[in-house]
Image 1: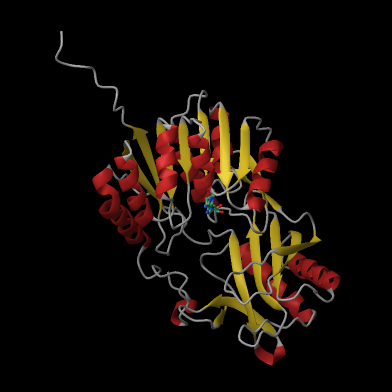
Image 2: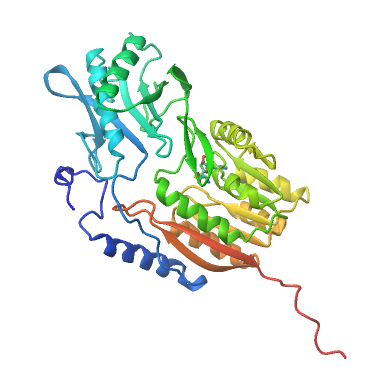
Length: 394
Ligand code: SAH
């Protein structure tokens, strides 16, 4: 499979030239090289149809032909926007949605923001689709708080999307006036609908806000969570901690099989979503806290709190030595580490191993076909250092 954007220096799919089976082998070997010394690496779980899997699109606006705006992604290692009509990784419904956003923005004569000069209005557009529910969210990121003719924009957008057979359920304006490459700003205004979309995953329904983290490949997320919950070996009696929990997905998937779930997450919007998600799914044994995971767990461990199982799913930079030391103090029987970066997983495993945990095995999951990213589930169990029977004296 090839893509015409590759020739134009799109860096989105660095592995596209490699046959999919070879990509999977390469990723599995990388995990084995980094982590094999800690335990067995099981076969990587790949996708049957490794295209159009992304439920989230970020498109950046730029000047196009004839005074109209266009949108696309930054070319590799540059700040030049490469116009994108369709993409092999993106949900095709979102390609159509983005065409409609451009048409509506052009109809309203919105000008693209210019990073260098600081002029113009519209910076980026974030799209999300709940693949199971069909709900679509449009987030228009503007450089200024005032969006002239916002009502007309929404009207034009709904007409343009309807023409393309797409149902947009919510439209949000996000204001980012800072000189930054970070896409979203702090302030938000709901222009249409509820300001979030719903999606269903592993039998539970989730609300997803513009700024909450949500896994981008739903089919493989179900595989990932299935492996994570299986690795936890829950019996219904356990107190479970879901650290770096996002909108609570792993903890809520595990909640039916546990006594109690406690989730911790830094992003306040995601925590609000997690609390609402527990409620709407009728989950009564889950609580969520907005805090830095290291700080929260250090305080919990110092107060003598215990957990039977700890799930941890940190961002690419991995966890911290203090977090891992507090995990050991809480003395869970099992730790399930879900990692999006095998390099930091290897670093953190060196620490967990010294703290008395043994990796039982690793299963890589290909969440991001055609890119170099690798997701891995690792199950660890507590070594019973006091379990040895006294020997010698009779
Ligand atoms: N388990 C969730 C989210 C995983 S992504 C899921 O599967 O969807 C990692 C999450 O860690 C993000 O939601 C991010 O906001 C959160 N995070 C990043 N740094 C953190 C910190 N220091 N403390 C707590 N959460 C953090």
